[in-house]
Image 1 (cartoon, one colour):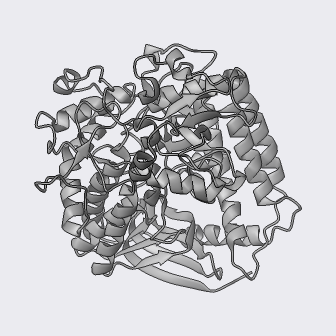
Image 2: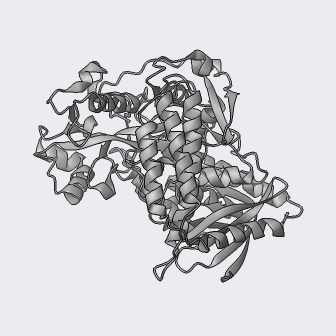
Length: 576
């Protein structure tokens, strides 16, 4: 079986065209390095565009006492001491330059009357350090980066699905993939490859990720190339995802709704947060609010559909329309619900992968020479609970650093390794799937993975449930061997879904196996059978394949940062 196969050569290949991928590509182009960015979604609509709240940097425009060291202290404390201190320092010390880069590219931030960049409080921040552009910060960042990439004439290949990294003797030399529209194959040869392929939150039934994104591509591509995964069990559940309609389950209701005075009630009408965080109530941190809502539902005080109520209807209509326009519009479009008069039914939803590909903190290199990972595909910054606003700044800081390092690596390379056998394996993998005419359908099996993870590896976990989840994955694996793949006149999406399933199964197994070994409750990871934090588990778990899990020690926190770590008041602040 053969189809059109296009040969492409570039110095550096960036896989993923969200914020981190484009920032790395821009850095490479500004340094005069040949770069190609590929994405399976349109560059104007990656996951980055969904980020609403803001981007962190200790600019001290509002609070002169703020500093990168205090930002680092807040980040480490919120991580429950599982973040890598070196990674945290790199991001917090490079954050201001990241904001200046966006300004240089023409981004419009909200500003004070005197022209200073406006910054607001987010939960667990000591000072106001979250810059923003309304409640569309991620969308504005993406638009800015797309515009800058166009100015630099960076080639961007949309609707290209990468199926395998090309590696010889533990050195990457490119990637293989196909066009989602017409099935054209791509052999892309490159000196270096940057993975900017997102996380794995789509493997849960309710998720803030849209269909066919964040399916764990980074896990599969990295591990099959020889890389490893760090902390896959550490997944942040957002407290407020919609329950219906079914095809939009998990769509986020911005936490600004609680920040503006929204109240959480169970189906008995009780304001239940007083049982879980009487001081901060609805302004508590994400992990606590999500756990509280989960507990209310699990103990039978939730709605018949398995949710709780978020109510802003007591607020003045003008305040809602001015401060929560996106929330109002979303609920009106999806449910014809007027939030100025009616409460919103919500439940915790899988939101952010705090673990990811194992990388070195200084340059985000991986175990494979010439391969990098950035953004949500990587690990090290967030630990067991992400500080709100840190994900967007991470994209910019490490996009710049990795772009610079990949440029130097490519320029210093004397010759590029190649392997006809590696290309042949990638080609044969697609051929085998296209020849598969079994009776199993991908969508059905994908739902099986999502059901297993939702049932057994949600907000609260226990050993028997996690092992039951692994047993269900084994059964799905058996069914996947009898898959039928059927591209049609509309395109090759069914082939892409088959690879998504491969990725999801690997990501789910890594998550379950690491969750079993983390026999404690810490941050986002709640074990009903181990409700206390275990100091001996202040380690990162590193997964390199089924049954292969190692413990990695975390470096000591520098004394000047440790001295700044303290409890942070929530008074007057938006939540995360």
